[in-house]
Amino acid sequence: MRVVLMLGACLALAACDAPPPADPVADDSARCAAAGFAPGSEEMARCMRTASQERQGDADRAAWQAAQDQRTAEREQARQDRKDAADDAAWRKHSEEVQEMMGMPAVGYDRDAIIGDDDQPPTASRIPGMECTGIGDDESCDALSSD
Image (cartoon, rainbow, N blue to C red; front, side, top):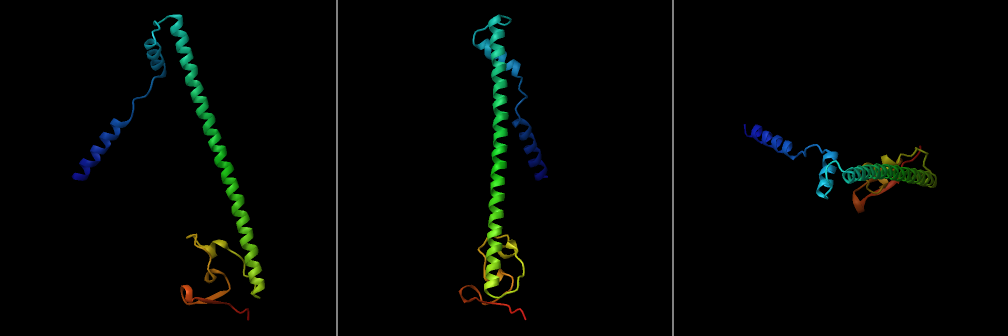
């Protein structure tokens, strides 16, 4: 019962929080009247026209800014994608060099399998073809033989 009352109170407060829909023409008219222009006068019409143009200009600037923000986000994503691809290529090359240097068979490369989702630095136990015993500083690893 208490939960139902709390839910009802939350819904009632949420309904009160929503502002009434704005009427821009009425707002412009009130602003121009407050500036001292008489309803129906040429000055009132000019004030209303200026207010409308300002409102349209504000909307145009907001739309332009949103488009700029979207382009910036897309450029940043493309830059990050290029960096990730370069990092993957470097990891792949390093992995292949280490495997060749250790005389290990090429077992392929999967950076995510080595690093994992936790973004921790790679450890030898995560490298394909390595067998490790111990934990932490006492860990020792050897390459698996290809026999």
